[in-house]
Image 1 (cartoon, rainbow, N blue to C red):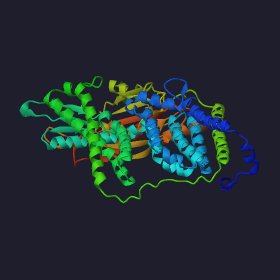
Image 2: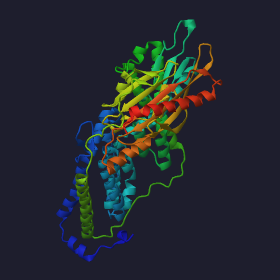
Image 3: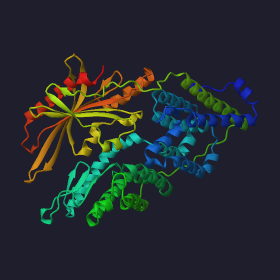
Image 4: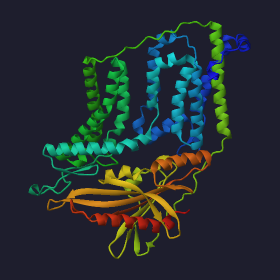
Length: 567
């Protein structure tokens, strides 16, 4: 605490008092330029190519991967306009910087170096966001930061957060599918829900087979996640501009999530009726070439959501909330002009020095410029004891879904006794987010997760490997109307250069840890074994069969381990 209560000594003030106003302007400008070069120019993370790109250029690269984040570059402009609206209040401040600003300043620099060493631009995004707050506190103090709190929070929308799509897209797909299927059944349009797909039911009286009227999969663009972030941004901005009081603004901000889902629900219903009244080709088209009506329904998502947002805002305007109001910040100017200038010279010099030290530290830091050798062999055995392998390979849909450079090996193993299982090996490409969790994609295929547990795979050579075992099931109606349940079992684990883990989050942590402390850039792979039992009527399942199947897939995993894992 001594550092933060240190008084400015007279010798320093004497030296600073001789510095001209022009020198002060140069130092302050140099601090801004140095940070602009740090985040806008300095090579930070590897993209698709072998060379690194800057933090800000990383925003453009992620936009190329997913055009739904096209709004990101416009966010700083909006934040600047919000700051301009408060220019009179800003000018009334004395701009007495706080030494507490050193804490987030140093933390932002440390986070920047960590992201550079770990080769992840998301740490750079967080560093830039924290740096903005640090500069406000360092140069203007806590009153300035409090005054510009919302423009600073709004800057969060500058950074594309693609991992959130994987985290939220599939749950929203399931919710949208369930609600749409239930609504269609309520209004008399019989349908069957299979995972995230909605298929028209068979109608023998009309000579219609299952899926003939309509068949659509609620894919990621129809889940609500693609419009969710932009709608949250719009609701935050509109609430800040149109409503008074934090409670009203918070309600409107949170309403963006159900509004995005409502918009996508309307979209699914439009596509369904378009398929029934005209044709699936006219209403939906194909994955490669969606129809004009399909594209038009996407704009209806925003129309419905924005209409709902404006309606909720009108209602909130009439509801009485207890608010304290916004206090006008006024700070007395008790410093002399010369003293203020001297302080800004020191503050600007500290920022420039930290930026230079950061660049020097990154330049001297050893980094791994190439992916390590994979820990998976990517060659499945032609047979495993009594099991004979049949190569399946990667489907065309999977090729479109996977990132560039992803490799897959997959085979179906069958025994003369009728047992069978599928073994899949997936090797990530140069993009770190190539792999995902089976818990994310399995529900999209119609499977429900009963439970999961960590098991141990034991090989004959003595090695032991932890893996995750998922207990899955799905239900359907048989031809005689009975509810049938199919159970399945999925064992998976992640493999790096010389480490393996059964957990997705752990593999991300280990990846960053080894990049920073071991200088190893893992090329992660995932090994997966899947087997399925025959369907049985609901309520007539055999618990012993489930135990035997789990033991069987665990034993197979131990036998497969020496063939697919190198270490």
